[in-house]
Length: 297
Image (tube, rainbow, N blue to C red; front, side, top):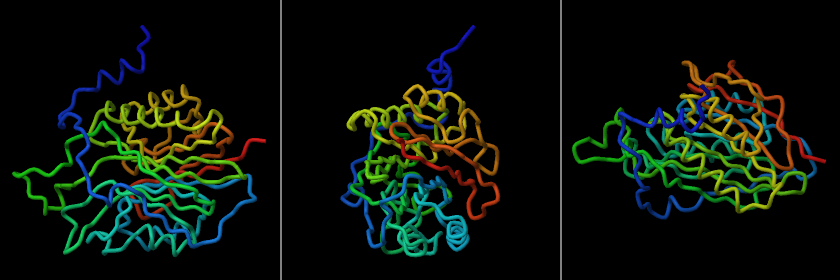
């Protein structure tokens, strides 16, 4: 008997973790991405190299920086990017990588890391670095969330192991120019504390957001989608929306343990090809995924 994707995801909807919760109201720092536009841009190319990499907070910053310098890309989608945390040596990781790589950057805050602060706020989020012109950035903060990370009176927020946080999962959306046409990039970090249900709901929020753009617009969805349960369901879900995976039908392990978490998808006026997981990289518990995008003629 054939079982639908929705049925499979529903079967994993029960959770040991708290049920999904509405986003917590946040301060002004969470509202708008921070952009740094100080580097020259590329305007006359029709192919570009893309990387998606969860850099595990940037705690091994020098190693991560060296790997990205040795293996350059025109568009970098980075997740788990720290700013002013003790574990990452109080570095603004996105800004420092922008300097090292000579790339412009958009950075959006996902969480305030309460256990990582010493006198001033510390954050973690997503960074999109690029050599393409940045036209606009915004944040899509998901309505469907896990309550797992929220601070509680009976849990000490100062203990790093417990990872108490203010904020919620989101996608950083950066509108670029590629081959003189719009290219919209969704740099996503979906929920990890769920057996697939919350991830699926958050992905639905992304695909609903796509409706604001004209048909045929070049779109990239990339990042850590936390598809450790039934990754093929998520692959086929986005294929149904017209997206192509950088690795085709292959399900690639992107985590050092055993999981498929990280993806690059594209649709519209671009093709994505030559996707490869770089298992030779150091500096994170995730492996980066590289691909080439080609503008449609």
